[in-house]
Length: 182
Image (cartoon, rainbow, N blue to C red; front, top):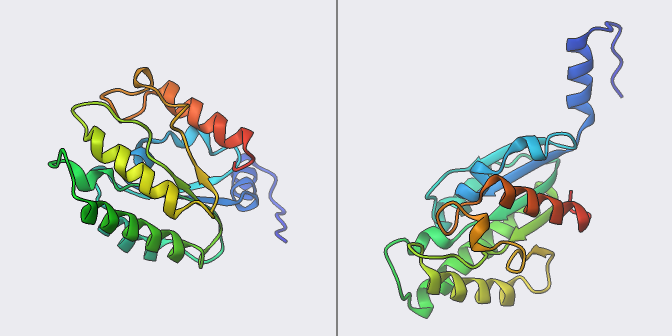
């Protein structure tokens, strides 16, 4: 419990921050560019996410999430295929295994963990790789709670075939709220 004897705007803002649960977004550019303004009414938002980040660096970044985090959303893997139009099954398995390990690690510091599947991407992005990777993710993460935006996110919701527009992020955020994730 926190008591504050100073009733001013700054004190109210600090109490508001202390009273909110924490949300960590771990992943690549999808998490990086997700507008915090869509989430910060309900959460203190932290990001361990960078554009063009592959699955191995995402796995390593899970070490940065502190214990006591309320909610974690993990995404990524498609950047492993930026120069590969037709990946071999072993490549898909390696990416999926890295993301599974990242997901498992996050169960230590995070109260709840959700995995964000890949939506259908469009050229110049690796379309075939996204389909194969998403199928593998669905198989691996089937027993867990995951966010599956395939039917929600369409080409018109992207800037370049993969990165979301403001409307795309609004649709994704609304979906998470409707499912009780946020």
